[in-house]
Length: 166
Image 1 (tube, helix red, strand yellow):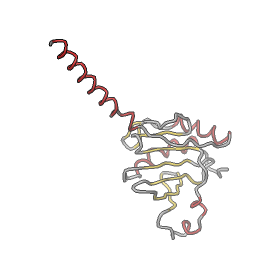
Image 2 (image 1 turned 135 degrees about the vertical axis):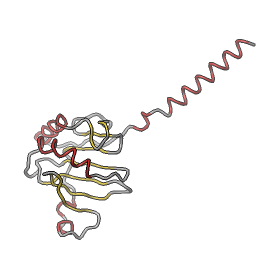
Image 3 (image 1 turned 90 degrees about the vertical axis):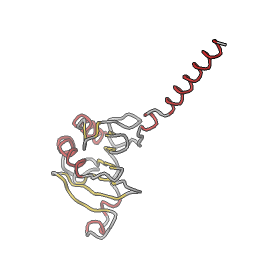
Image 4 (image 1 turned 180 degrees about the horizontal axis):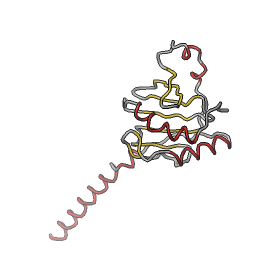
């Protein structure tokens, strides 16, 4: 009878461990598509990756999968950066430039120009303008994006020169 109780206790403990492992934080990891820019932009993006801060708007760096120098993240899916993305169509839309598009607005924060687009749900997408590479930042969870853009501006100004992206 003692060996039966011992096996039952071991099996119960094993079941708890398996259940806990199934609910681990690995399920919360972010994933994102990695851009595929030309060699010049890839070099700029590598420089940006080295200049990025360890913390953005109170969130620690937590890069998405697959690992790449072209992507970065903070706080899981809260803040995702992709460098070397294509120019968003709204960037050349005259309605946006004239302020006639409710879902897209141009603007600037700390010397970096942005196109801000409202996406599905509470996601905002910011894409740099007037830089030699397009850098996209997605901010989720209805978070106030001002701190995010302020925290990332120094790295962007250091690594991505002003100019026109290909």
